[in-house]
Amino acid sequence: MLRKIAVPVVACIVFLAFWEFLVWANGWPNYVMASPSDLPAAYTKFWNLFLVMGWQTLWRTVLGLLIAIVFGVFLGMIMGFSRTMRDALYPLLVGFNAIPKATVVPIVALMFVGAHDFNTVLIAFMISFFPIAVSVSIGLSTLEPEYRDILRSLGASQATIFWKIALPKTLPEFFGALKVAVTLAFIGTNLMEIVSPHGRGLGALFDSGKTNSDYPLMFAVLIALAFLGIVLYYVVVALEKIFAGWAERPQG
Amino acid sequence: MSEALIDIRGVRHAYRTASGPLPVLDGLDVSVPEGGFVAVVGPSGCGKSTLTRLIAGLMKPDEGEVWLHGSRVTSPRSTVGMAFQNPVLLEWRSILKNVLLPLEIVPTKLSKADGEARARHLLKLVGLEGFEDKRPSELSGGMRQRASLCRALIHQPEVLILDEPFGALDAFTREDLWQIMHALKAEEPFTGVLITHDLRESIFLADRVVVLSGRPARTQYVLDVNFKGPRDIDHLYTPEAAEMLNTLRHQIEIAQGRTEAGHAA
Ligand SMILES: Nc1ncnc2c1ncn2[C@@H]1O[C@H](COP(=O)(O)OP(=O)(O)OP(=O)(O)O)[C@@H](O)[C@H]1O
Ligand SMILES: [Mg+2]
View: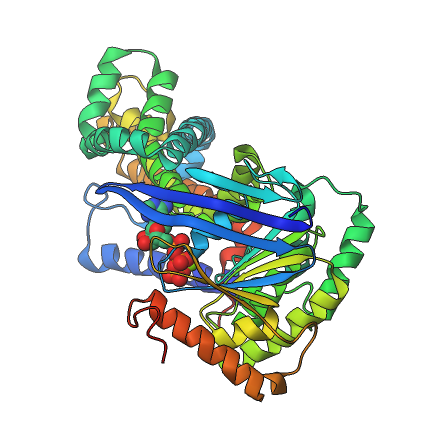
């Protein structure tokens, strides 16, 4: 347990020290690259902004992700249970996913101009439902027929088969996809916050740092984003441990 | 007729495939008396698993009838237990919870505590005492198969359908499980249908062996096994056993089309 915490903490410290050293050794000024020692000043100066903006980024990411989960699981179920729907929806879905979201962001920002919350949640959702839908559909469609038959031969309904077998069996794939999706949703949120004019959230704070040439602030935002991203990711990992911990093979 | 618990009459079935209908069963008749144990052997791909799916009510035959305890089978019913070559245990459940699964589906008179006691009893009977709380992945293949047998029996089914349950096991484990099957049969009053590729297994476990012809399958030959009830591995090394095995082997060769019927060696 101690090792589990100590190793990443030490890794972070080493990383920060290396960064500080790099800036110091090269004699970079602040506008090229801020060093870790500049960051506390930025945080103390803008701490209330960090809290407000960080919260906005967080809740919009999480809301977008939750919608992506509901929609992605629903879509995955449809595609997982029906071959026809799978054949019909797959190309559409792949095509949609292939569009670089950086091009969608300005379109959405202009389409619903001023609706910052809506825009941001929408992009976070759009960018992150794909892996969830695919993983659920693959998990369901590759369920071995014998698993179905075990319950079906007892007269179980489709719903019972889904709850007792299909759903739990798909959970490991689902959480694998969720780890990807949470990162994507986070990227989506920030893209929108940066691009959208007069936006909110950490992305907007980054943008204002850029307009004011406040380089330490920009780097401070980056670190805050990294921190939030890590927190979100590990929340998913914790949920995975609780709900799909059985899929972890004992190491031997 | 009325005493047959499973009665299959003139069943024909074809799968609809991309390249047209594939006839699999073509005039199949099998009847199993209550408490009986029938083994079904036949060439690979002749339709044995299809037969089990028909008995279990998972499919309806194109033609002919499947009767179970005096009523026509048209859909799955909770009085059937099944085990396959693949034990299909649920990895997120303990062995005990896996065995208890059918009780969560079928209407049962057993209380929760009684069901659990029954599960523990069955597990003990098959030699899995002490493994109740283990995960399936912590068990060997033979042990998983034993747990799967317990699951098939937990809800006291009238009919136990076994589709090559021992096919993937090594010879010693398989013989172990044969003995366990006899122990289970002595305690549980089920009527059994066993699909197998192993002729020794068929005469060791069943009291009747049905040989199916090659696809499309019909009943080609029925052999009544001379020994009744529990038996010992030694039985397989008696002259009677040798004769039965010889007959069956010859019938399989006919079914495979390697020997002409009537030109018996
Ligand atoms: N769902 C299906 N759709 C189309 N064809 C099928 C289907 N299931 C089985 N078949 C075909 O029907 C035939 C009989 O299959 P079945 O599984 O009943 O054979 P089997 O006797 O159990 O074979 P084995 O001894 O190898 O287990 C095979 O040729 C198989 O390809
Ligand atoms: Mg088969």
